[in-house]
Length: 506
Image (cartoon, rainbow, N blue to C red; front, side):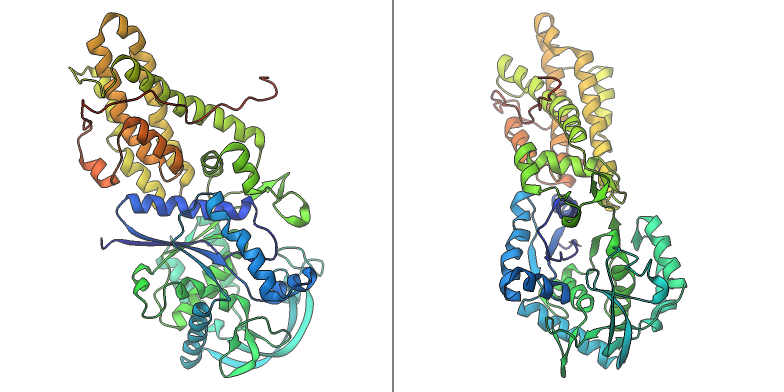
């Protein structure tokens, strides 16, 4: 396998417990990674935690704990997202790990030796919450323009990165690679920012010590963002580790940290002579009660609570189907229940249940295939390009469009079944009934295979009921539509998606 793929979440800042907003990013990356693996790619999926900086140090002090002890405790809660959301990440990196510190130090030394780091003095406004410096002009009512939090005046000796040297190079990058920043609305925002002029960036601190020491000057620690961004390479063992075969990456981030990933990070990589990422995709926020999920707003949705209540696959489906990846969306339990009942229980689950129950009860094995009608051929055409269509949407991380395309064939399957009425054919034409059921079962291979990255547990249950297991999308594409063996036994199925009874229905 020589095709490789690499996708990363941002490394999460563990100053509070994870919520559905952070699980959203990880789930999107997981779906993409699972799809790529099924599509024949040797795939790397990375997530982790960003554990340095003043905000972390203060959070630990507030909790009355040593900083590392505080991090070790809360880090476990971020690791728990993996089983809660059924993620398939290949690695989980912490910036307090030795492997990361070594690579971050090497990156600093490379930037310095290439002439892009110098020492000077810094004076300016700093937001601890955002770990970001702002000019007087950028402040809104004297507060951070991004979060609205308070800022502090900071004066200190600092090392600087020559960001100003990369203004034209970045603009050229955006022009020559229009897909580098996605979605396009975010691209325009970044271009506008860079065109306004880039200043050199302060990249060290002396006012606190919770960070990676600057090599050769341990009075300074690295600015948390310079340290954090390097994680995408340190997990691969840059520059010569075996896992560097996966680079370059697709970075998936929240829109609030796009500038770090689309401006500072590519500038650092250019300065270090490292190949640039393939894409930086900035998604929107899940809101609750109309506001971004935040502990301070008291509107956090706990991933464990909602997956325990509604099911992991159901939540995975909902958050990637409900809104366009890139836009904001408000989490509504009414909409969640509606999606589960309509899309999953009715359109998908009931379809499989009706067909496979008929097969199990009346035949007991894969039905015989007899002469096909025009209606059969018309239905089968729906699956001619379904895999390539979904692949195209997944390439651009359009998860909602991929699911819409999959549901088009699910609706077509329901319409075909209702039109053919195999339950009536059982009484009048059993040979025709078997053909109709066989056509439906063969089409179920494609549906099951394509929902698998989104809802892996449910897809595996459907595979078990079909007594069939996919190997790869390529094999399914190249294979014949009719490939099931008539001798394959089919047992009575059990329900995969249950309807949720609403108070109104009760």
